[in-house]
Image 1 (cartoon, rainbow, N blue to C red):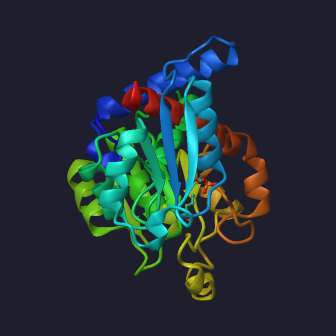
Image 2: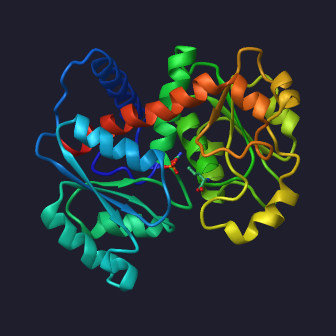
Length: 300
Ligand code: CP
Ligand code: NVA
């Protein structure tokens, strides 16, 4: 494993190995056991979109591993004034040991990897969010013990989260069910891959997706970059809300997961969110541990 561009590039064994290391690093942190695996290493973090969790967890994670992280705003870099990505990354490769990038186009992340000579980590694109799903898988395994026989349900937009959950879920052997309106389905290539490699249901029928689910996942209706579509999407998605009725179809001990930030009263009710706040914030915490594992795997 040289980069983390998307989960489809990783084998199931590689994903499990990241999750195992993440569990170990979580244990070490809790017990104040030093784990300075990345002493002296420098991570550049390029953000062309907003972030709370990704930025803070990567920065804290690098510090806890004995290294350092630099926040690089896309607006302030010369990228914002038109310097090509392929030049930027060849320069940054001379200074840094790795780059985490949050941006719009997946092809930009792939280009960094193609022209740079250091590991590239995808911190979210319009296409996928692999770091989030590693934390999600870690959380599911923490609560359920294993992935065996589980059904993972996602309700909402067939967006970057849906794409990555399909790939991560199928790779871990879970059944994955996505409920989304027609016209807002996950990417075709992701669905085609999943249909060949596991059990994927994509439907506009929320009940069919939620029935007997072990984990119910949701995300915002309008992602970063889709602000102009917000009003239109509120109409299209108004029934795609994780509420008590949806939860009554899932297994009684089903987890509720959300990558955050959440919009209460839209994709999830306040009551369901608060009833499941424990696992949702464990999931957010696990971003730190899962990403530290990725950093150790790639930068050590
Ligand atoms: N879930 C997630 O990636 O959060 P941020 O946008 O705050 O980084
Ligand atoms: N789908 C959301 C995820 C945020 C973590 C977005 O792209 O804005």
